[in-house]
Image 1 (cartoon, rainbow, N blue to C red):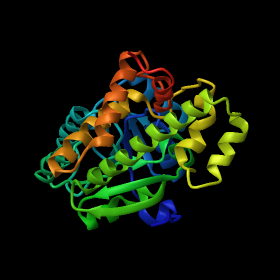
Image 2: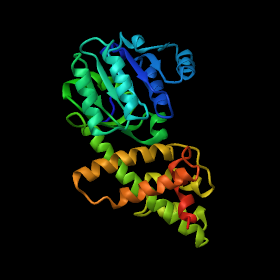
Image 3: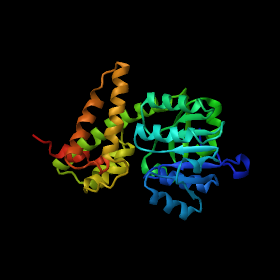
Image 4: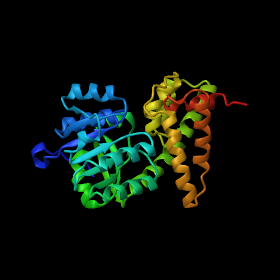
Length: 298
């Protein structure tokens, strides 16, 4: 569903945001632009303090600072972080409030968090996102949501502040299941683009001619468009860190094996990103994968 414009007066929601990294920081800014943001929180307090001062909102010192929020969204790194934050919020949010999780975690973690919050009368939506740092900055993320439809409607004004598309995929966990599918496709595309461009280099092809030619045909894709030029000049500033990709793929690997499908692409990507981390590229963008394709280790 395409994002709709809503005035602050039409919903009157007060929102909080936890996790102000490369994705969460811009998402929180879009919430502020929509007139919804009341409080921000982050594990590194100085980051929350700086953004709060910049936007003129509260910087949370503890979960108590979110107690007056109608919706709290979070975008953190690990399943354990999601569980920790959800447990703290369950103790302070009023009944009828909603927690939205934009992190990439397991389906089981999403279901566990939903049950934990439901026991306190608090709604939950698992809503991982895709679109990279560019999507977060531009407010053009694809949001894949799982949970009760009525709860999603409560959170919709928050989600639509930074979504180009918001899709209700099914019950709790369906958002994370969709993200797992998304990451399989992303991993496979990354493998192919990095391998193909490494081959292009070895064959002496001119990148200024090669990239637009590839983009104009069936090989065109987001990763080639956004990362092709930068990876060919060894610029790996992270849009999405290789360490985070490996974390996601290990989650996906468990989901896929449990589903009983062949996991050739996933297994290769897990092996490659693990090697990339061993080579010291954990903080580099996933396009650093071209380093392996150029010269595999013996």
